Figure (cartoon, rainbow, N blue to C red):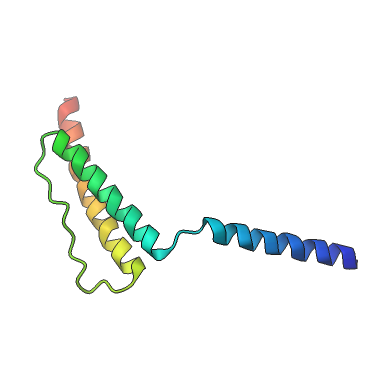
Length: 90
């Protein structure tokens, strides 16, 4: 039974360390969200659209809040992309 407990604890510790190693930091989440907005904006510009990729981070103090602002902008640009794509498919 002691061996089973030690093995279980060792596996749990390894799992926690692995999860922590792959987790994004707050800064990385914001940078990823920002990059996503910029990439989608560039794609729209290449399609001939007028694009505003600026975001207002006033009032966004935490990394989660900043990432949410970028996600909202990404959703807005995605809707614009979907509309242009639908028009070109007609």
